[in-house]
Length: 277
Length: 131
Figure 1 (tube, chains in turn brown, blue):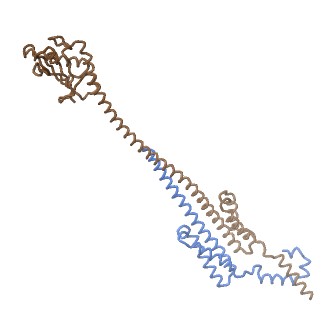
Figure 2: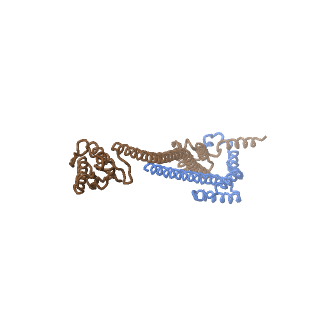
């Protein structure tokens, strides 16, 4: 091998070694891209969601730093910068996906809440219906009880059910002979009747006076009227509104039994109180 | 510059070194072959990125990718492989960016929609409660 050849060989080797492809100074595009990368590395979301994309950006920038030409450097800086943008979008997309999962759970919870409220409302409606039904039932029971109480009270008053209504008879013994004032013994019956009327405010009464056939018709008519009024007065004193009480004197016109015996006459001298609805 | 620091070599091997430099310059330190892989990658990325969503959400990026791929093909035809390689790599990045932007936008839209539907649900619950 000639000396020249050896020289040439050595020189070539050296040239290849030294020139390599020359390390260019970083241009503005690369500096900008490196700054973007440094900023991106600070962002937690990017590190968490787009590490691969960031690494690819890093690779492009590393290649840019050792680029053999200005054009390559600028191009690789562009690629690096674009990959940083990709990383940002990818991270944002993944963050949005994570948020979607979260929101999905929130929505499920809200749906559950809505369903619970729906059920609650349904139950409310149901229990309200039940309450109404119970109230109706109670009302019916009350009405029945009231009717029963009425029956009892009237029974206490020794009232009779007749075609004219419920008839209560105050016997002659409650009046002094020929007088119109009620004897104290009558007051128990009057008080009972008054409290009965207080309890059933929609009922009115007709007070009828009756006599036997002793004495003139006129006298008996008059006596029967005054006795009826006397009963009305007693009821009013016991608290019953006068407008609910009608009076009528019937004299001896309506005997309930034979006037020929004293027992019969005793029965015919009476005041009848008709309780009307 | 290395040569300057090495006067002995400079002195004795002027001609060989000069030849070496010429040789190096001729072959270029980067005799770039046709960037087949880069072109293929760019095309693949563009194909998967070209769709309705990227057109709607990332029109600039997708358009850039298309233009660059076109220019890369022109460069290939002219055998300007370095230029073609650069353009292909940029086109690929642009296409991927378009896709990432579109996907991000869609995801954010879905978040908005879900948030809205939750809001509606909450309002319904409020109304039901006040009944």
